[in-house]
Image (spheres, rainbow, N blue to C red):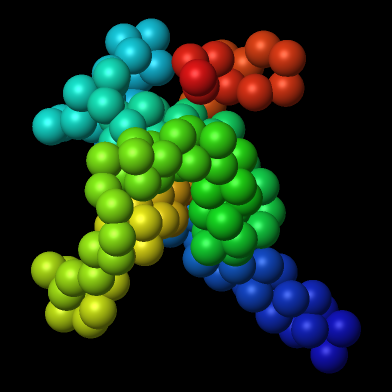
Length: 150
């Protein structure tokens, strides 16, 4: 009985190993931070490009956390709060009055600031999952932050 139980535990341990390692990292999806670039269609000088680059770098830097991806994405949005605020300030300076509209994604009432937050949060979640799925390396860091975050 002791030998049978030992073999059963050993067999379950092997299954667990296979279960945890069943997917291989796809490094082809990783960002090469040596070639700094904004997302396609986003100029690095515009607000969206600056926010996206901040989000990408922080997402890759924090992806190794054991927290759920959505928790990490929230932390990324917090880390890029200055960049998001600057981008939002551009809208506030350009427009006066309410800019209520309908989201082309959800069809729900929205505002430009709400859409920018959603963009930032969704990009953060995507990049965290991308970095984890690819087993990607984070960008270089200096003074407690990823390099290239401005």
